[in-house]
Image 1 (tube, rainbow, N blue to C red):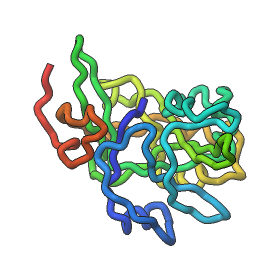
Image 2: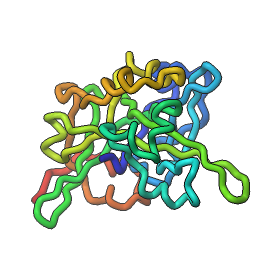
Image 3: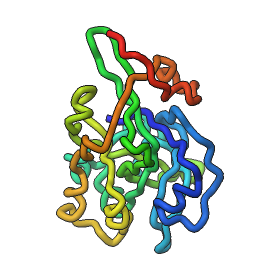
Length: 224
């Protein structure tokens, strides 16, 4: 799964990586949590745009937006089958930029937080889906979810799931709204190569989403 992540990359770096002609103000984030606004890259009108959507997908048919708290992640193995996801996976895909993400390793009654990133500390892009929901008062809410897959050999030491991380040469296919064939999309769901990633343990300060400072990603000695 993916329940917390960071985004601290400079705007000019994000513009170059994702082909953005303009970029809204982005504040470095060290503890992004579900229900918060997250930066996503979408193809709208033939161009890539960076927008902020609420993390936790609310299907268009939902009675109310609280369902989003349960739909933070979407399993890639069943995303084309689940009623909540089968529409957006075909036509509303997005990239979710991240500098790294957190996962908790359970040892007995202890849960040790770890921070996972690229070995070269370059930004990554999660495979995401988005949806638009119309509220009873006729306002619109845009939300998103992160796809997950089986862990690679590095992540298996911590957890059995990890976010689907896309390679840069896969971005254009993922954002192409004309592509809806599962046979073209599903090959992207493989675990990201372990040999270009790294992790380290962090302090319990990250457990509280109100803590959003560089202390969250600071390395500490593992315990337990």
